[in-house]
Image (spheres, rainbow, N blue to C red):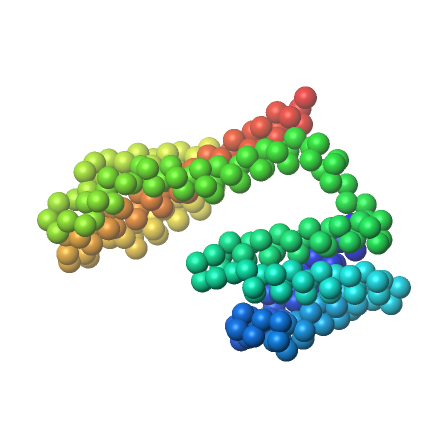
Length: 241
């Protein structure tokens, strides 16, 4: 397992620490003719050699270098300005899959993936991640969509019922912080309110925007906190069985 961790570390260092933006742009522009593409691939091989510190793993090093090269090559030819983000994710997923497969095939790495996904806590965390990412995003967008329209107007009114909901969310947070003995959280809320002081705002639209941001922020934190508490509770129940 330690070998796999080192391989992933080598990948992260090579792709995110030792790859300047100018290299990425050069690869996208020159594609297969880019010198930076080959230099980038070589760096990944050297990182594997340094972290594993053994020439006995030369076949693994070359295999990962080749897979990295071809995955990057596919990316630079397939991506456009519109799908750049999508291909960034695809590129990283393919790199990790190739590392897993090559480590398993060439070094018989004990990945323990089957055992890992038989652990119920993994599934609880996966559900939690889904809840606090896309599900929360859609929920917050739905809740705020009517208030978002009000931001486009120029009248001198506050968002309808915004103050009421801010107060409700504040009290919920304070309650959660108290029962979990996280008193510093209350200080965080007070600090946040001092940043969004209504009295200092000069234009009516600023007030609407402040209320909008406050509600969105509190909703976002609230969903994350509630999800986290639910996860901890579920794990406690599962472990007690």
